Image 1: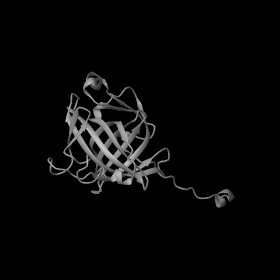
Image 2: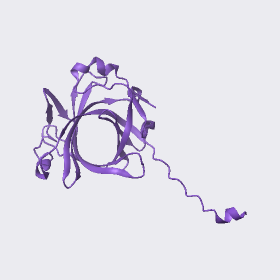
Image 3: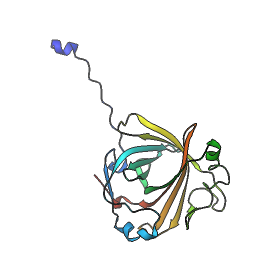
Length: 215
């Protein structure tokens, strides 16, 4: 053993970067086959995707069941790709565009969005002249409580979250002229802390892996 070896500090093992479904990662390019959406653009609420977008932040939600996780890959064009994975198997993919953000005046006004009888959880949700039917909840004809989900959001440093929030969310859908035959509406009351909250309405469509090109 050399003198150099005696005084050399042992190497610190480097943490492995997290792995995400579909090969997605920070700064990954995401391109969606936009032709079907452009053909149906006048019948959709959201703008169809155009060209490549890039992952700027990654959100992770662990559901209470444990094996199921929701990943959100936030893209450059005010949109996100949502991937639901269970026990390592991708179960659903959705592309959403942020449609509207509402800022309640105070905490009481925010809570009013999640209480019994509120718009979030109603059997139907209207957006302009279009109506969407609730997809979550047991009784389709009655109000159902929003689903609470805690999300941790990461930026450039995968070991340190940038922020976290709690969603009180509900998914709605309507028949539409898209490849899947459906257009989704996701409405979420988002709680970032004691005095920071908003309500976000996002509109999008289900996708398959064949619809995506990831680079």
